[in-house]
Length: 324
Image 1 (tube, one colour):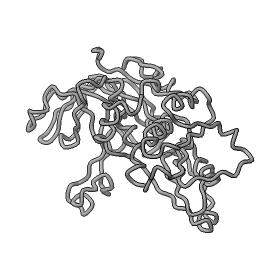
Image 2: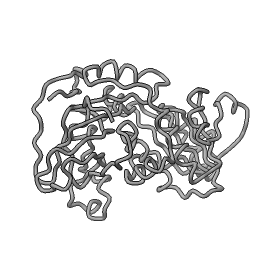
Image 3: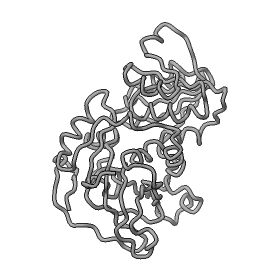
């Protein structure tokens, strides 16, 4: 099979043996995969990952030795699974297992390949009416919606999302159903417009200079190492910063100010894919405007180069020739 392989020598399209599923695993024919900022950071050395990257995908189950009910079904998958025997796993928190595996990021080959494996227990069926190019957003939308599952948000909570990249837009458009007054702050008017068309209040960062407006909760989704420092300038004393950015670079933080203003900093990573699929199926978030381009697997280098451009929206890699 063809697969994108990441190593110290960079990324190459290579021929590799098709994986064979073991009991408890499913062999998936990948239809489409999305390029995430995390994939771009992996290419810079984040997590010291070697293997096939890619964790945003939609595919069809072609084999599952002990779960034939999944055969032929379109699926996405939770990207984290643990050892199964530690205290965290036994309490249902396998994504924080100290020995966890993360699809396409740590310890397991991902979706930029014609075939991939995933644990059957991690599979979720894609609703029949949901196109591949929208269902592929299940993982990033789940991450965006995770804020609603971690922080106590009410309709009156003053929430700002900092960063008008893909994750920031998804967070603002998803969280507005919990906090109608949410504000998305960014640097690009044309990107902010994507959220504005879905009912989100948007502001250019340049318009906030000189204003001392503070928010109860600031979701930091800038994708930049200085994002936390910028969020500190926007959160009220005793407020909460939800950090979504993962970068290879070290992030500066004013600890004295953090302590004096009694600010809570909450890390936020992956989320519940079933919630994201519900949002997508119910059309609560329109992800189509976030798609910038689609490329075949053979053109993965062009796809990654385009995804790396400043201000790029979602770039998809179509693995299978079938269009949905």
